[in-house]
Image 1 (spheres, chains in turn orange, blue):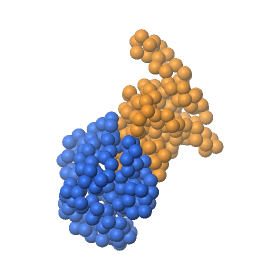
Image 2: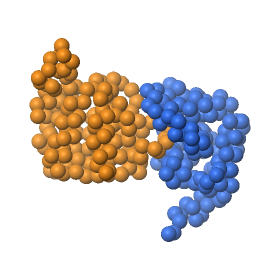
Image 3: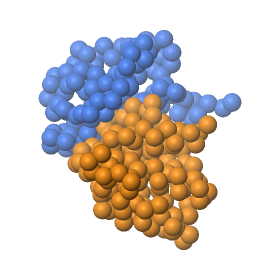
Length: 144
Length: 161
């Protein structure tokens, strides 16, 4: 999968070629080193006093699923790469955390999402997602 | 099944059970919040709810309400700095979560979970611009205009510094 230019068959004139933020492109270009994905999920129904940032999410009572199936990892990386997004400062009320690690257990890439698939954070950058529902649907399918 | 420790060593306030170790902090916060008419009503509702509510204390800045277990998680020493630089006491955090807990179930079903770009969802908007803002004004605390904020430690549930 070439994530340097998304939707390569489309041009800017027909609504395609939306560049991934450079830091995401760099991270996803390393995807061959991803051997494990930890999916953290904080209950969507939990009400919190203040929005939950990525660091806070990891201190709360989340559930964790660990995936090491290369096909599953490729699917979610592709979905992230194909999601339209732009960098926009703002708050994230994180409910999902996706932690990609290499064979040595080192974190290579972290991606956090709210429960709607509208806001995200990647390695400290704050993002607006335009069509993140597919990511949420895929993550929810892990529970079924 | 053995009940969790916090339920076994609890003090009943009507339908609201409070762990014995948190009773002092809870009383401080409840007396403080009771100065506000809206929070006073919420406290009464919590003590006369149709089903039991549980207060569970922690020391990891976790103020939240879990509808699945009807448990309010509260850190009595966790204050909040708002995104506009204001400050709110731990007690106000307790009031915020109790409002979620006592809300009528039908309200939650009526779109309260819908996305809100400023408050994250409509239920947070309802509480923050409603009871939380009302109590903040009564108690001389700062009002929030979003669902953001950063926690910091204070000595007492009614402290802000």
